[in-house]
Length: 155
Image (tube, rainbow, N blue to C red; front, side, top):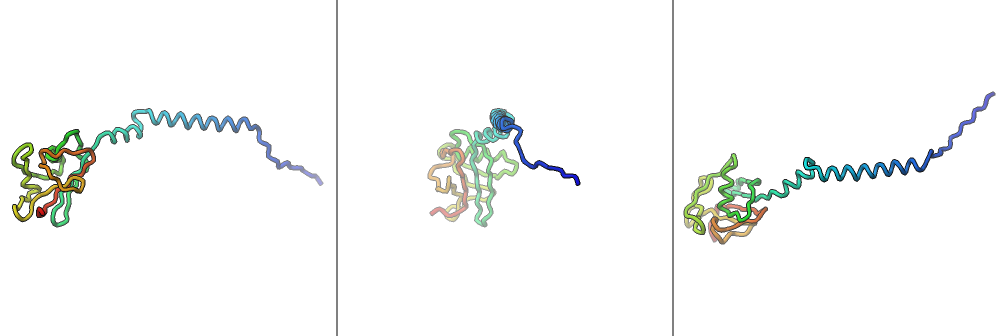
């Protein structure tokens, strides 16, 4: 009968090799993070560019509950509500509007082919859920403002 002896004990070849692999992993992680962060074509750089371009939003609310949303109107410093409405006209699904007057006396009297009704209902606009007290030719906006037009009775 032949007896074979099997040695099943584990001895690491070298702790230095394990430390070297760990150090190599850390260096790779740091270098790849730096390359990703500073490469202009990286996703990170693209996201930063998008964040720089500020936008304003326009919502047109009809009395039937139907709403139109314009979410990609580019904001410019000092932009008025009237300028925002004119910028909206460049959208492929534009909403027609008509105004009278100019500057501080600019008055919107028709929006989306629905004209103001005088004493009954009219187009009234809100900026960030507050009813505006200035005309559309003078009310300046800030980046990320939301302008909402409602066809309602003035109370």
